[in-house]
Image (tube, rainbow, N blue to C red; front, side, top):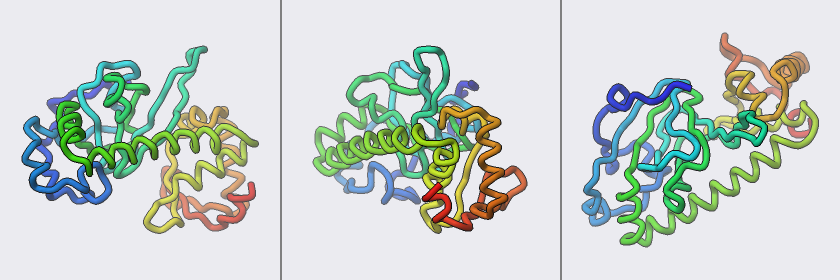
Length: 234
């Protein structure tokens, strides 16, 4: 994987007060007093597709809030295979486990071009100790992350190949409209679903032929969902 070159990725210091997705991220409930306690800089980074945000087992320096794009969290199985354990989207937090362990539990890789805010651990610990609102938000994010990880494993690693692909299509729906879905490289889908690349391609092609989904870009990454019931009952 391509490591981050921090100098080229850095765009400056984030303006958390005026963040366009502030209501979705960790700092949604902070007030002016809370912001006055942030002394370490929160970096604004733009990272290209394929770059590694951090590696599994790395000593953690901070957590990352995802403003745009998607991140895949990858772990190695005992036999050396890569498994995608979760996909993060806008508003999600990467590396939250580091608050308890000081190390990252997965490798985080930019699935698309992404923009993130890197929040130093010292900032998180200071605010978590002094702001009941942020402490509650952290607990809620932590619980949601555990639930999401369990849901991914339950929905995407059991059932037939058709069921796994259909469930991924549904999980990747755009929250705004619920009718479009964004997929990614077939290799990545295979790693997530524990299926061969050829099997993933065959199942997607079959769903297109059966008019359950319709491609709406030239790369075959974005689809319009035509028959949601067919996907739900695959």
